[in-house]
Length: 346
Ligand SMILES: [Zn+2]
Ligand SMILES: [Zn+2]
Figure 1 (cartoon, rainbow, N blue to C red):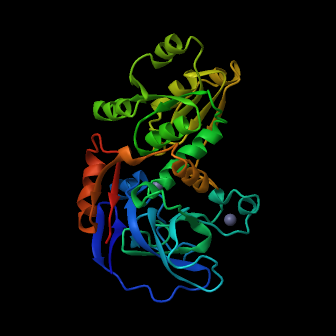
Figure 2: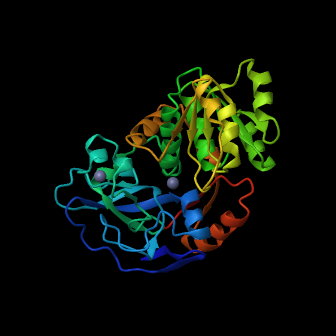
Figure 3: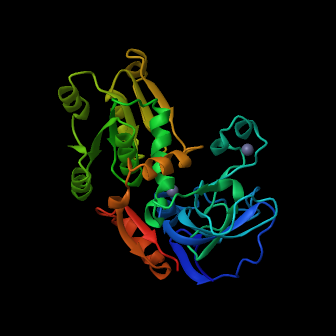
């Protein structure tokens, strides 16, 4: 079969790889229907390896080159021994490999596993017609969640987890810095759980999309905390989600939170940022990090199935496997208003 594989920064190739053969114990083969290109994939293309390991991964035994793709939907075709799922089941997957033994895994925080890794980074992913994954990653899909929507379950789960890290409740005002894939996912999930998102984005094309989705939108730039105080009539919002990974925005994110407000950092990429500690202590604001998700995908699927959450407007293009390298190059240099590109590997 053909697959889009990461060799090194700037080098993703579509090439022939061996067919899978029967799955081993605990593993499942899935025929891929759709797979989203993630900001993580683009990051690995731009200047990886970042989450891809240079050597062999301790849980998967695999190192580069690796087939990318972890945001997928599809249908189970074959199951290894000890797997309860039936072939034919439509699924998406929680991308986290986990050891199941370390302290984080034991308390349910498998996304913080000391050996953790992601499908499509630590093992071959779903930019291919077939993907092999651990059975514990599978999340079954109801009939009314189509393949395209289902492929967005994973990034939506990142948004849901970040909202949880900010202890977001219905009615809360949530400021979302950056309307890329994760900011957009967080905004849609915030609406679905009854919170009130306000999106801040510098790119006009992305602001237009956010507005078209009925979201409240502010321009980025100078004096955001002051503009926000005028808008809210208080010191700031209940929850701030920093989704850009721009270091200079961390201090600003803190200043945008209300008394007792929560600031959650999701964006990655920057190495340094400075904050005024008294901006936390004087108003008893809390600053938290958010990494991926844990146990969140079934909740996202339930919200989509109930009709509370529809990520379809975030899908800008659906491409074939052969277009993956060129599209990654475009996303790495000038994404414009493009939020999510799906790959149809068939
Ligand atoms: Zn992703
Ligand atoms: Zn573990």
